[in-house]
Image 1 (tube, rainbow, N blue to C red):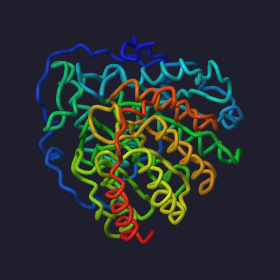
Image 2: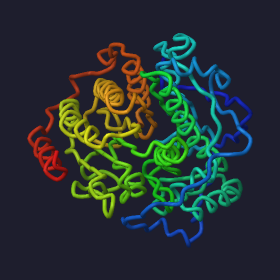
Image 3: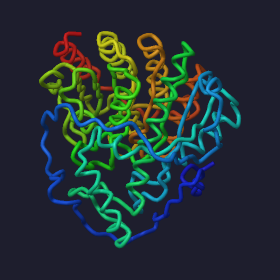
Length: 437
């Protein structure tokens, strides 16, 4: 099946969202000049305000089967849990971060028989409710969040607005609600995985198949296609609600997760580790950025030279990621899973393959079993070639299930070129020296 041609799925569970994907009306709009998020500078933000536990009436969100009322034992004994939040109303024509991304993944999972329909209780799609404003303000400023909510009336009038001065981050009339839904999916998966780990020594891995993505969104505003920091919100939630103090975040998106980095830059209890292409957007994540204040040493940024691929990432995992995690001793591992480092992705120039992502998924799952009772949740970030995105996520599911990779069916070694391994070795040695690994 051509993954470029995918019909819009219906959203179920009582959430009715206006579809605005074909809107061509555009205007530039700032959400209150007092936010100053259009010209933010790197700094230590300190410990941010923590919100209250979510309340209110649950809203069930799902694009698949209704599993919210499953017995706890069935969820606990599953091998993979996932949530789907395609944000069909949050869309700009011809934008790479489009409403086709999550449906493409769903389509691949169905085609490769990796859904509950084919796997029964092994793979379960969970229903969930949106995050609350208090959840979001555990990471983002209340001024930004309330301003974005007010801006939805402007988006309704104009059809589409830009909420970041440089233009890439847009909003439609449904963006605020759909961003709450995306963050809520991650929170619900964290809840389910943590609860499962109390009764199952090998709990399921969670995967939030959501958009808008989140790792560029800074505490004071949106950035780089991202509205709310989904993984950052989940990290604060797991500390506040479950008492899991030490959170290890791995970000293998091709772009630096500057928003997550900033949110926890002086927090000693959240370790943020990012691998990203050197010189890519947004230009942050330099190798010497290690955190500050009490958080000094709990940020690790490893810029990789263009052309880095599978061999590079295997070395990085063995020599940097695993040793850091073992030294930090986390209570849970959260993953900003960006699939835009794939060799076929149009927005960067690394050479990851479907097999690279299988290796990362399998290795991170094993690391979580070794260090933190198997507690691990992935969050979709980038990935803009629909085919490589969909098949790489599907092969990550194969890894979670302990099944062989299907990468040989999709990867074409003939398009790869020699990796810059000398430069990679130098970068690894430098980061090991900086962090005393």
